[in-house]
Image (cartoon, rainbow, N blue to C red; front, side, top):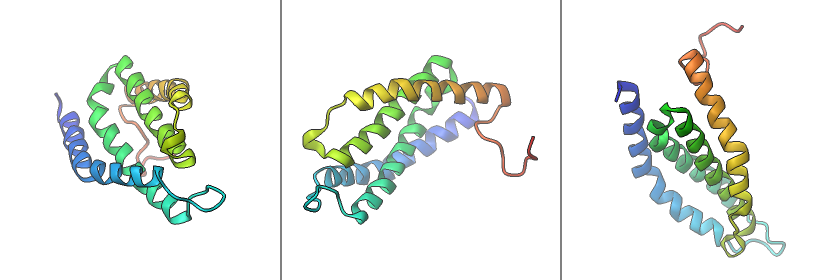
Length: 138
């Protein structure tokens, strides 16, 4: 395992330890929200849910990053992360009582797979996942 992969795995474990436990608590709380009379959760619940879900999904990406060295691994990581992302959106919108995994699973396959492939291809071509801020525009 090269140094960059070890560093990513180390940061993924740190994110898991510091972010996932509070994220699970917040997700359960947000998914079982009482909401207003119209069923829409208050703005502060949406904001907290957004921030905590972002930290949890970042930790998930960090943990799965070593799998993304190969093409099939990058596609699977994209699918898993997209499924998790769309699941959090559905949980926030409908609550845990009405949660059905069909839409998040479909979006994980349709969106996550191609995104994983595109990022893997860019990393293989350029050596980096995103352009650095100091690089000149094309």
